[in-house]
Length: 256
Length: 298
Image (tube, rainbow over all chains, first blue to last red; front, side):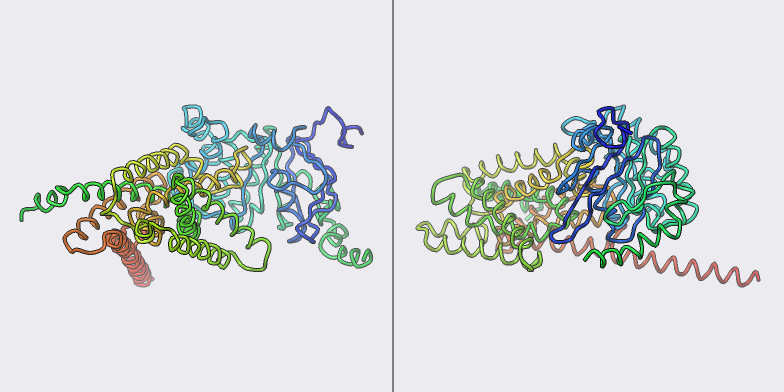
């Protein structure tokens, strides 16, 4: 069990979060959260609003430094992993300015910026990578549309394509199924599965519990700390959900 | 008077040539920067920084340092103070901006009032396009070229920063640095435009061209061409109008930009008020007639 205690030099985990604690002022957002996800897995991240899902993403992206604890991506520090372009991010819909005057192709090309020179002038290899990524998510025909002119599911796929063009091996998706119809949801689920089968690691935050069994190999139940990490069916068991969505409040009262 | 004379007569005066060069440089640099400002939502920040550079420029004048240096220092000071007031008190951002830039602007006014060469500095507030010297023009040209060059060379990074700073961070870029660079360029741009239209009207040149171009295209690359083209056109038109109508030149330039914005707002083929109303009516009529046809078939 040396790989699981986080000290192993031969760290095989794609994402490892060890004892991470984050405060926003007085508010405790993450409480000694510990988890590790192996490469090639699709992992669902489940929890209520305010359970720390977005904070956990920020910590993995390195956009937020934890008060204590460590994060590693493929055994490397988040800063090194970012420089290597390993981490791709698909933002929540509300976080994007959909009226921004960029085409789908422009957005996907932004996945390549970390691999380009000083002026970010795209080379042949960059154009090829973008074309392949667009083809992969089946948006080639819509590539010159302004991003706001896509449907909800197509918008998500455009950002997944950005991660593919980036050659990210770890993909973080923040609530990708919000405002997405059933068919697009199935398309995205299939796409994420294919990426994982090809060796990528996918972490998907969702409060949409019914998508979990078809989507994920494993699931994490988060309530500031990791309450449970296992098979989706175990996480979806009534006892477990009560722990995350209800019972925990009582626990806290007991503790206080 | 034939049309050619109409265009050439003002240019027979040296001061008009200098004014034309100054206003075109200022218009182009401001317009390029404005494309990012309107998309990030930094219009108010542009207003704040362009006013807050005043004490920096006056102090630079007093100690004989370059205006650009004083402007950049006070530009960053303003942004820093706004951040401090916003983050460490219950005052919201718009109020923090309002407090900081007006206070710094007032400091500038007070400094001007105690500085011997008052007339010179009053021109900073209202602009003095017709009084630009060759030395002034040289400084403006150098600053303008440097600012324009950096904006154009790093345009893709700035656009990424404006669109998705989290992604910029995720691929190993430094969004804070990019934001700070834009603010520094904003301060430099304010210096370029001071002489043309004055501190008070700089903000117009920092917002109107970008907003106008935004109503005309869905491509950022085109915005970066349309905005400076419109802005330069307005600058020249405004200057000629001020010459023949004998009105304030800085005011006339901004007034022209405002009028062009209004026209685009109304008549832009893609995002104009009138064309979208017409399109909506046409859709409604098409839907109604389709429903009629369906009804007739049933």
